[in-house]
Length: 84
Image (cartoon, rainbow, N blue to C red; front, side, top):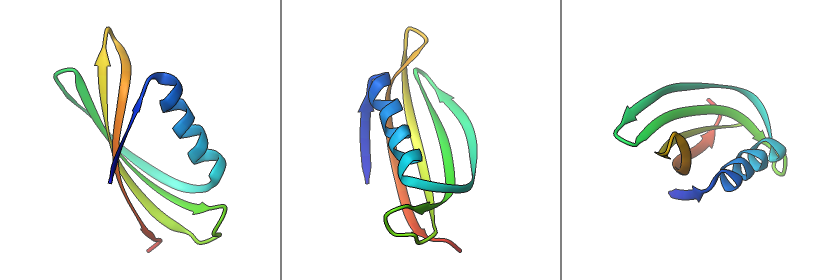
């Protein structure tokens, strides 16, 4: 499943929502992987959603679009599952 966040306010808002609604246990990132006016970053998080209390792993690949040296758009694709 993919979604897009356009503008820095939307991108920051998505990240604030993630932090406020999940207990973070650890994670990893790889990248950035640049290509033309984009770059990709791979994220892996071990989290517990506050509304379920069940630990899970979440992997996300974010594609950032850059114009005039600023990030203007983030598209992200993710999968979620039980912690292993």
